[in-house]
Length: 205
Image (cartoon, rainbow, N blue to C red; front, side, top):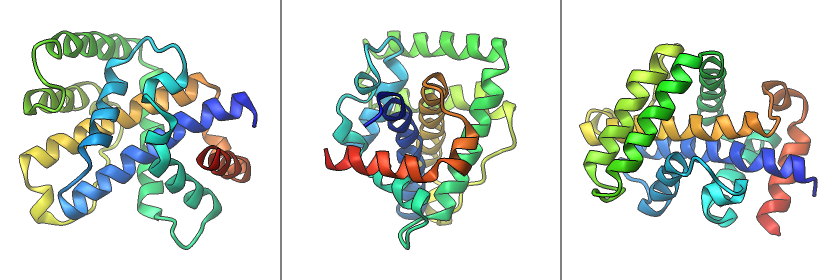
């Protein structure tokens, strides 16, 4: 198991997990609070000791790793809509990386959320709305809107809209880590086999 590849696959699986959760909200209106809390913590843990530290435990990424492996191997379980979300989110992160102003604003706004979290529960509506607003203000202007497909009855609910925007922000956070670990978009085209194999090894280790 290559440590470099390992450190790339974990955050990339975080992008896939966020995309999977977005689809779950759009289709069913429900997601796991445990996974949501873990993803929100990635936004506040801006000085981790390791990639694993960002996500708490590698096991928390199991769904993302499986979704990623399916996508990379084009298995019957592969979900092309999630792949489209991931590609769009990596493109958004690329635009973010080119804007020092946006990076500075994002860092400042997340520090504000850290302070708020001292007084408000992480899963409180006020926190979700705050993260969603950061996405709307800082990230959404950088790229074409990401069109979320799902059931209208779920997509029209304000809390679900806030959750989706928050998870888009979480996905970009993981995409930032992926790029910092040397991840590049061409790897999704030319290194799918390696990525899938590494994801499988992490899942079974």
